[in-house]
Amino acid sequence: MKSLRFESYKSPPVLVEVDRPSPGPGEVLLKVAGAGACHSDVAVFTEFDDEFGPSQLKPPFTLGHETSGWVEELGAGVTGFEKGDAYLAYGPTGCGHCRACSRGQDTYCENAATMPFLAVGLGRDGGMAEYVVVPARNLVPLGDADPVAAAPLADAGLTPYHAIKQSLPKLAGGGTYALVIGLGGLGQLAVQIIGAITGATIIATDSDPTAMERAAANGALTVSSGPEQAEEIRALTGGRGVDVVFDLVGVSATIELAMKSVALRGRVTVVGIGNGSFSWNFYGVPYEVELTSTYWGTIEELHEVVDLYRAGSIAPQVELFGLDDAPLAYEKLMAGELTGRAVVSP
Ligand code: NAD
Ligand code: ZN
Image (cartoon, rainbow, N blue to C red; front, side):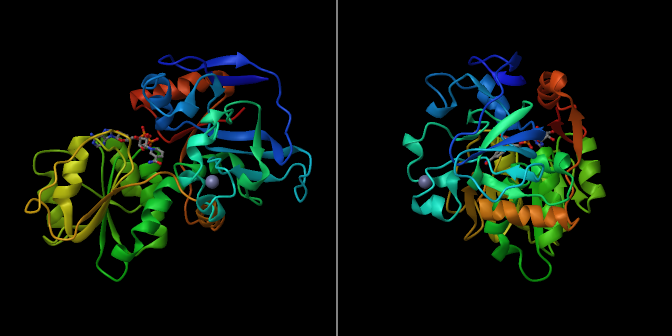
């Protein structure tokens, strides 16, 4: 079968013919419906090498860590799945028995250092192929919802959802404000999720005006980049500042914008892996402001994200590519030319 593989460090992924995999004990073979292209993959194939980056991300492996598909074949010992039913794959693969994994948080597996892979599509073969093998415990049912457009929910939906849930106490009550910086695959879903599960007013910004237009269509107020940007954001909140910021870029300039825009007792979550820094000083930021990072989410939260999708409360905007055009999906992602999350659908 055809697959898009990360073959060697610091080089773009390539289309390669590989054998169709077989599910091992406790695993399920899915016929892939869709696999989203995430900006984190770009870091995998442009930045990492033997010295820098997680040791589990050694090439070669098939990309695609946000994948949906139809059950094709069950591995030994697996029951309770019907051939042809649609599922979304929760990517992270922890040990399955530590405290973190027991609460569905494989992302923070206590045995991560000794695990061979980070996730389906991150170390072990992912969904940019005709078929993918997924541990049965990672499957989240999609029912009769469109499985192709669902693919981005597994990361571009789950990651902001987790960050937003951690910030919910700050968004409760009336008159609260949330700022979303970076309106690509994750950011557009962040705007939709905040709209779906909180009453907060959403302010959104991106260096690309068309990305802001898409966020505005989903109910966000938008503020363009520029020297007065933090003041303009503050003015929209009546001078108080925003209660919560989600920085989906994570370079020094966006973290600084977040910290300049946040209100007293507010919270800033850096989601984007821009590797920026921020110099903290007691007098330099409002009292009790929290600055934190985050990584992906739990499988329980992925069930909740799918519930929102099945209820029609959120709907990923996608740009579809065939497997032959999978390299083009990443080229357009890197060039900032996508009109929605790139989904490769074989
Ligand atoms: P994307 O390329 O789809 O979107 C990025 C958006 O940010 C684009 O719209 C771009 O125009 C905008 N942007 C870039 N630089 C900007 C700047 N300086 N100011 C304002 N806007 C700017 O990427 P994505 O797939 O949505 O991923 C977003 C980030 O989140 C990436 O860094 C990715 O690696 C990271 N990520 C983190 C996690 C996690 O668990 N923490 C999970 C998935 C992705
Ligand atoms: Zn574990």
